[in-house]
Image 1 (cartoon, rainbow, N blue to C red):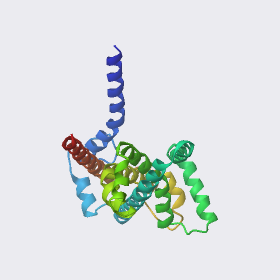
Image 2 (image 1 turned 90 degrees about the horizontal axis):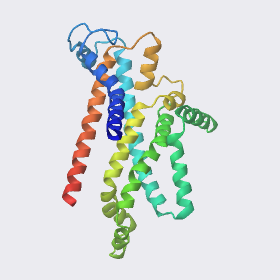
Image 3 (image 1 turned 90 degrees about the vertical axis):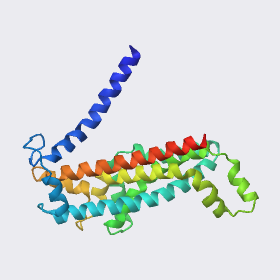
Image 4 (image 1 turned 30 degrees about the vertical axis):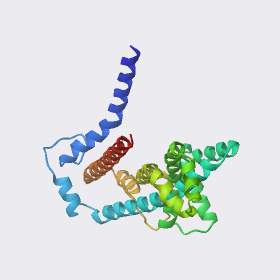
Length: 266
């Protein structure tokens, strides 16, 4: 009975999580402006999306470009900073390690609204002109802890003597980092990059408070403004479906490669 209840709970949870995504994907193949109203199978929304034949297409495309650019830059920087931070945390001992790990977890459990307002006040105090730079810095700040959590398990699995052995054999610290540590930490770094990238794509609150008044739009702020007008642009359903499929395919490829690498090691 316990096993049955556990499986039932998991299936209910999966249905709740994926039903909205499936509905968006299904209704992206109909021209209805209202989600839930089926007017016949059509690929017109995808055609409009790729040809730009939609109202405010320039703004939407600009929002997508801004979102991808901010996500790629912030995730790449967060991956580098998070990897270095994870190595530093791993080399700490006792209480210092616990304290720093606790501080690293705070940004992840802190509500986005509080993070956004805090960064907004910080940028005003530092007299930063709000725009691309402040949004990227904000995304780096909440993406880095996820990279740290992704890299730390790889450090714990690694033989701690390998790095010192490389130094004893004549490698410089930079060479040992590049040729010994990074190859073993790469799966965690990639996982952290993907987490930071998807968190950046998904973020609204922090972006909203740190983008300033220069008219910078990301996909989340565009959808928010579009919804306030009385309804979402139908082509957004096609765009959301494509983004979900791209991320899903990327995750499948990475997991398959990781499973194959683990099998080869065994």
